[in-house]
Length: 157
Image (tube, rainbow, N blue to C red):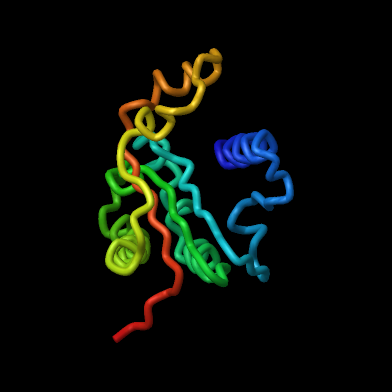
């Protein structure tokens, strides 16, 4: 399952940085808890995979848990491919994705853009000579990504 793999990868990278105390988990495991800073990492970028697990990925309850756990800052990292996926049931897709679109609109309006560019640019200064990094970069280097942070959830007008 890609979620467990991404969680393990993030934990490994944090350990290398001496940040093993940082909690990394799935949305479901954060239910009922709060943290000063929440980073949401959207794992999927393959359109066919996204279409296959659309209802799970875009479940409004998961979105609610994800955005309501932060005390100070919410950081969202994800691929544009999340919103380019298609499904046979367009109406169902629109219903599922609308809360996420609203979230992205609010973050883009009220948030601070922390990064924009390709994955290759993002890791440009890192030592990627190791084989495992090269494989990842070769596969995903052209993926465009944006990183936004928001300090306070905006009140509805």
